[in-house]
Image 1 (cartoon, rainbow, N blue to C red):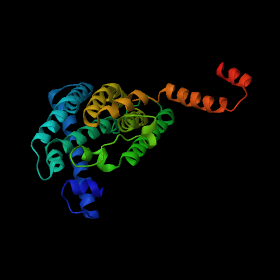
Image 2: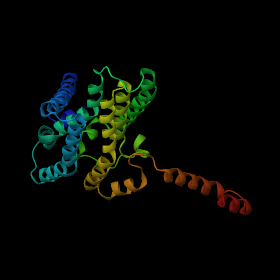
Image 3: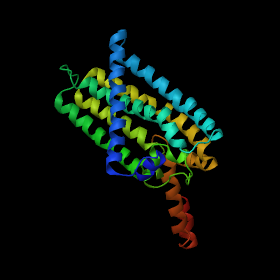
Length: 266
């Protein structure tokens, strides 16, 4: 948090940190309510509005945000991250949070349940816990500053993060957030909530492609190698195979010739 506050040119204190959290939460709530109000005012199904917002957000992530970052590199200023945060990062984060929270907000007030209460909890709660765990592990490995793009604007080590959960999964934050969104929606038992959450899950592969392309532009060949080795939305089986092959090689090298040949055939 200290690094994030420094990049914003804010005084490092608990009050400032709480103020930043409140700011993000407030903008998220505003976007969340605005999306619901837009659907009601236009008479459109909420899934249509949800899909439209995702389309705009993905366009921002894959095209507008990288273009603006390149422009910022050509026009340096004293506090480049603060400029980008005010211009688009705060709103971009709030939109993503609101999209993931909207299914639960839509589902909680409803009295009509597509699933019995016990069944919805049995299915949804484990998904919720698993998703939140992925998010927590992702933030713990990245750090709050890197999670919010600070290292893309200030002088810092831009090495690819390959520790913790990032050893087996490239996008634990978005995957975990979408999984938690689906778990919460199932817990409500509401049909529309589950439809919105399913839509969020369908966005994952599109997000992964756009974020991979953006990270390759920022981090260079090191990220391209990381992408080839680590799964984006699911851990790749070939990683386990490679580890097994390495173990076999180590053990086999210490065996007699006859047994070594037998090991290689397994």
